[in-house]
Image (cartoon, rainbow, N blue to C red; front, side, top):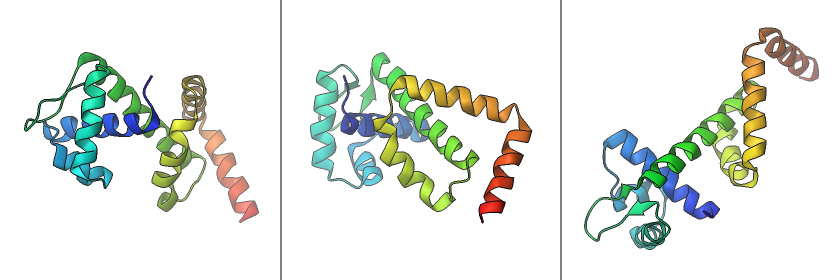
Amino acid sequence: MATPGMEDYLEQIYLQLEMRGEARVSDVADALDVLPSSVTKMAQRLDKEGYVIYERYRGLELTEKGKVFGKKLVKRHELLEQFLRIIGVNEEYIYNDVEGIEHHLSWNAIDRITDLVRAIEETPSFTDKLEQIREEEG
């Protein structure tokens, strides 16, 4: 079972591979604002857990297990950002709010939020009502 810290690194490795086609220790370190040695240490741990293929002085590769879980983590993050936007959270708070809650929700809760976001998107009157409530409280 991946820890929240492992999830953050795995998510960032996945994003680096998607954006650049490679995931270097230095790029992951910059993105997470940690030392390269921290990335190396976590990459070794993720390698032992079967998520990453780590070889010294080479880029990080994801195993199939790592790709599947990395994609799931990115989707969770995007879903929570989308949900917070829908309910009217100010853009300046969204990233930190998602970082604060994403590791504390069960996958079942994520599935239910997915259902709710889909229902809201399919019911434009719902978002209109939310906006009306915010204006009244405003």
